[in-house]
Length: 385
Image (cartoon, rainbow, N blue to C red; front, side, top):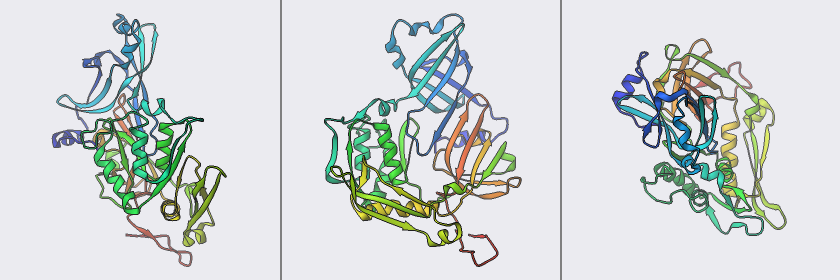
């Protein structure tokens, strides 16, 4: 969640809120040159550097100053939204590409985490090996971000690249569970490896406030905001059986030489299997792997816990009263038309700076404030809270 003042929140809830947008190149304000504003989107499990394109008026050749010097593309640009006395920085980054056509110049911006996609870890002849010890998950993630990607290694909340408060909280989860891994990198892209760590730990890693944020969701958090029929533009609720997973196998103790696993663990939910039939998946990785059965079981249990039921998924369009909300925040949604009145966790978001609308994609797979009975012998599908 973005940190904003109470005055900001109060004004944001108004249907006639005087929203203001701003576009900066360096410290220069070019807001009055913008012809079309972008949509800025994020999702919980994707650390690929994000890009947006913004069109600017160049009738007077104002932006031709980029042409003689390619290094100027490294100038930091910022997209902001809010009120004239307080703005949220929705995206900050450098120019990845320029396109001049007639009287318009199109700037494609990429956030500073481009470093994660520009860097590779190890190579085929000199791999980066993390097998001489059993590494904690967060230690390997830290090495990928800092030693291999060039992000700041400052171990305080002053770190300009990593949200250190969220990182330490995330680290404590795996320290408590003693989850350990090994890795062998042979020219792997750093962003792909960070995404793999997220997948192997059922974690969220995303960019917020121009920093990498880390989180492993707890089963229930308090709701940060409520949306009812009057506060939304539209909504869709879906139920998708393809998300079911009630038996999970996870490989561990991978042998690089023989390319085999010394351990395979499994976890199953018999109640879910009885109701839906077996929905199985195996997790086996040859780049990053668990070293022991306890560590592997941690993932198997988590995946089954989240996948054992068909949880509702919502797509909600709303004005910008929740602009300060972000990935991982929990919301209450009440919409009689689509038959929903419950709590959900935001897993994806998209802000249209052009239309002044925010889209939330939220689900209950990682927010369970109730428990479902095994109703196979009953005539009800109620959820008790």
